[in-house]
Length: 150
Image 1: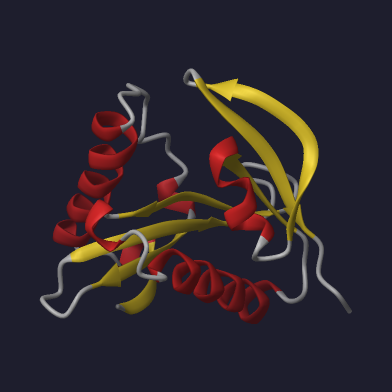
Image 2: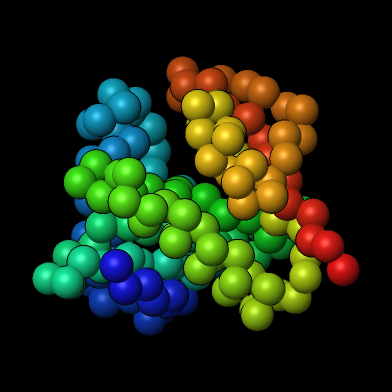
């Protein structure tokens, strides 16, 4: 899978359509969770796009600068196409996100809201539970934090 990162204004209409379609496919349809995906934060975010060899978007995530979702830089809307799960694409996506954050913002704390069943996945990337578990759109979530080692 090939990854690229783009600011919102650099996304083509087709790219934005395809990444939102993937988010809806997984978060709304697969997880049966109607929610307002377009929350205005995409316009302020950097967007990771993972494409297969046919240039089809199979993974995406957004990086939100500090102060948009949390006081810290945040990672959100992390999604992998069902056909790519179990291939390591999710770990590749997270490594790419963390590398971008360090290059763009420095060694800074990073916060995310994880579906609780993915807590171990994010722990693999040095995120720890911030102790805040809650329901979001009827799905158990846990707030997680990455603290860089200096």
